[in-house]
Length: 187
Image (tube, rainbow, N blue to C red; front, side):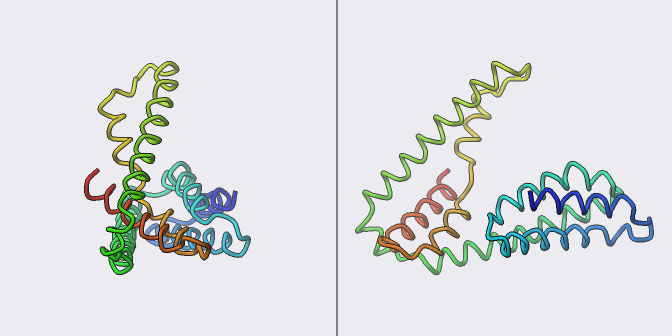
């Protein structure tokens, strides 16, 4: 709800902003993005869900209020920020990874990777089976394979395990890092 409301506010402002402010609209979107994320921290709700709903809302409503150049600029800024943050995330993962721990927990890590892959396979194929019965355009097996192998890489899992302070913290952290490395490099 927080992301959706912030996205609607951004759409409303970009719709009624003058043409002279056309190149300020991308910054406006980033300001509302930051506002949505900050609001989730204050309200102690999921910031990731707010970001997703904000992105969906702005894609649907805000981008249509912008010129092609401003829309391209927004896309370029977003991709640049995403690349920088992804690089920082992998740098952080690299500094946290201790290869000697893998020798102690390799069986657990393999079991986790197999369970995750089988789970993604079952969910993807099951949902595609349902969708293919309801749609004219079917999702073929190649796209299903891409969906199974190209899923999330673990930023959410890593952020969750980084804030976890309970028992087996190191085991969970090492397993998440190995899973992220496996799904990124191998898959």
